[in-house]
Each structure stands twice: as C-alpha cells, then as structure tokens.
Image (tube, rainbow, N blue to C red; front, side, top):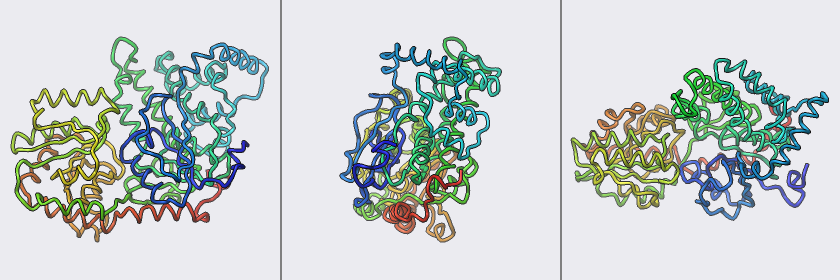
Length: 521
C-alpha cells in the first residue's frame, strides 16, 4: 500500500467523492448538488476523484474548488495517445503475456472477475477482491491470449448471433475503461462516497476493498436505466445497413451485452456499499430491483435554500396578474436525455392557441449536434422569435423571469430545477420520471394536502405537454395556487439544510458504516 493509500503524510481527508463526468467540469443538477454539499460542510475535508472520458475531452472547470477540497484526482477511461506513443512497450508486454499463458501461469484474477460479471451477473466478496487485485495490465488486456479467449467465450455464450468483429471491439470498449481505472491507487480518505454506479461506482467499491474503508453510494438518477435509454437511441446500435453499422441481430445482441455490463457494474457498487442512498421511493425500488440489498437502502430527498428562492418569489408580481405573453422556461442541459425536442414541439402546439415567450436556459456546449437539431427544429417551425436559446444564467435571473417551468426529461432522479422553481413560486409541468410526481403532488397524505404544485405528463407527449402549458397559461389563478403550494411543500419537506445534515450524520456516525472488509457482498 502506497503512502497515499495509508494517509502517511498527515490526517486522512474525511471523504473521497468519486464522480463520473460531472463535478467540477460539467454544470447541472448533480454537479451543483456536489458543490453545495462540500460548501455546506466546511469543517470536513474532501478529495474529489473525477472519472472522465479522455484527457482534454471535457471543458475547463465550471466550479472553483472550495477551500475544504484538498485534492482533485483526474482519471480517464481512455488514453489513445499513450497507446499510440508506446506501441513497442505494448508489443513487449503482449509477448510477455503470451509467454505467461504458454507457461501455464496463474490466470489474471481481474479477467476471472470480468468473466463472472458478464456470465453470472452476481457479485460476492471474492469477485470484488479479484477486481481489487488489479493484476491485469492494459497491454495484457489488449493483447493477451487469455483476454482474447474470454472475448470468444463470452461472444459464444451471450451473443452467438452477433458478428464477432463487432463484438470484439465492443467487448474492448466496455472493459478497457475499467481495466485502466483499476490501476489507479486509492486517494487517501476515511471513507469513499460514489455519486453513481457505473465505472465510478465500481472503482469506489474496489478502493473500499483495498483500503478497508467504508463506502457510501448515492444515485441521483439510476445509472443503469439512463445507459439503457441511451443504448436504445444509439445510431451505432440500431442495425443500420452499410458502413460500420451492425446488422439487426448483432445490434440487438450488443445492446443486451452492454446492458448486462452496466447492471453488473451496479451490483459491484451495491454489494460493497454500506449505505445505498436514493432520492425517492421510486428510485429506491429500482435499486432493489437492480440488486441492491433492501436493508442497505435509504432515502434522502434533495433540498434547496427555501429562503433564497422565497426572496425571488417575493418580487414576482406577475403571478397575481393576468399578463400576456406568459413566459415558459426550460432550465437544464440541452442534451438528448432532457428531450428538448418534445419541449419545442409542445411549445409550437401551444403557441397556436396563446401568446408565449419561450426561453431555453442552460448549457449549449455538451452536445453540439443535439443543440443544432433543436435549433433547426425551432427554425423549421418558424418559431425563432418566440423560442430563444439563452445559455446559462444565474438563478436570480431565471425564476423571477418565467411564469411556468417545463421539464420533459426521459430520465430524472429528483430534479433540483423543480424544487428551485416551486421554492420561487413557479408552477411546473414535468414528465412522469423519477420523483417528479411526488414533488408536484405530494409523497404522503400530509404532503398531498398542500395541493398540487404542477402538472405531470407522460413521456415524449408533446400534445399532452402543450395542453398542460395551456391550462396554466390561461389561468393565472391556477398558477398562483400552484406556486403557493410549491413554496409550502419545499419549505416543509425539501430544505437543503435537512438534506446535508443527514449526510453529515452518515459521514460521522461510523456505527452506521461497516468496514469494507466486513460489509456483506
């Protein structure tokens, strides 16, 4: 164990947050939540381990690191430049791997774990320890005979109808990030806190096993579900004819295998975590269905600063007047999972009935191709005057300037934007994903007595979304009643201080957190 792993240079940081593709590089709900958590606990020392795609693929930091972040560790799933610059070393490693294979050397424990993950989809302590051994160099994974034999076996077992050439490259793509990450030494910390499953969650589980430090897992959204939705929409897995696309049978087999891979990674995090946190009962049930032991699960709803947003609401005189045009806002990243296309189509339908000002507020640089598609749709519908893309804006410039928030996402956990809008007295139209219904209608009888603070619609339903928008646009009294209900609901059930106080208790109450060596797996 290295000095960094032992914490030999000084007191251990309290928590290592293990994140994937979010803080501090990508703005959005999860990143904002992480930043707020760190700032809300200034007496605790944090390390942030960020798992990203490849070096240089993400923009510069979007959040300045608070003073109580002692280190930022950047890890990358891909490193094409290193592979290209070191081909001679790779060839030497490949020859050494073949010699070890020919000499009947002990097979890699990591390869054995990867085999079990794909073929058995069950995780126990021995599998986690095999992963934690980290005995599979990247070169051996890429060029070793045992690795190739595993590719053949899993193709025959899981995707016999698939083109082996396609399967070979996908097998590499799904496992190479994990093999790379397993080589990273654990940052010193008293405990690890993963903010998702996937590669980051599995890495956090491995670090927990190596150091015998406890692991917390929080899922804002259910990672396996979101990856499954992305796979279903991926052009390279739709069986398109020609080019490098797979045929229909291969595409279907690859989707199944990728889904199996992500479910197995989730089981690694679930098995090692001492506590598995979700934001709502809907998400908790999905975790349990995905393999999380029910006795480990815990619900901690998100929260916002009710006083801050209440101050924004106090200046919004438009909510008690019947003004035109009504201002509709989408607040979030312009990316496919937010289904901004449905939002635009719904606005186009509603604009045929009432006057609206529509604002799309949020980052435009995460998926330029999708942003381009959304802009073209607005232009094709002749709505460039009514529907504007405004980019990111400070909160103080958002909620006093909109009458209705609309969220049309395919997947959410417990959206902060709904809590923010309701706390500011803005009613919401949201698709029925994650905790949206309980946020807008109440999660128990006492909550429901406050009344609805918005309208829930089906997924990908422009006509239904437009009808909800029209109901609110035409009825300022309804907007006002829902705005009042939203403020009361957030002030009673979704206060940020309550949320972070529960995390402080988890970080400090060690009797809640079994050591990783003794955790059930």
